[in-house]
Length: 145
Image (cartoon, rainbow, N blue to C red):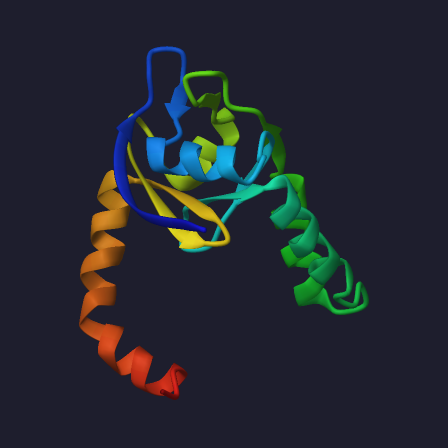
């Protein structure tokens, strides 16, 4: 659904613009509302409302008697905020999420199929540099073609 890598800057009001390709996908799929929350590797996850409900159902099924499940759910859901991009595709990224992800002004938005990830540009480049070295090895372990 969401694919690609796009560079965008926060504007003076702290808004980020959803890339035009993502806006097009949202229009085609009648997506108006998104949820942003703490992601992994210090990025921000962004889910469509439908996908958010799918993930919520999965995570609600985790046992609250397990400490890892409680910790994950607390971090994931306490950081969640719903956003509705305006007609130009702009939306506010809450300051606590920008702080979490180290986002200052330059960002990279990447499409990861069912979600969008928002990265600080420098962090994305660092992650990408480390990950490209392991990409083939990881594929070999994970994918059975």
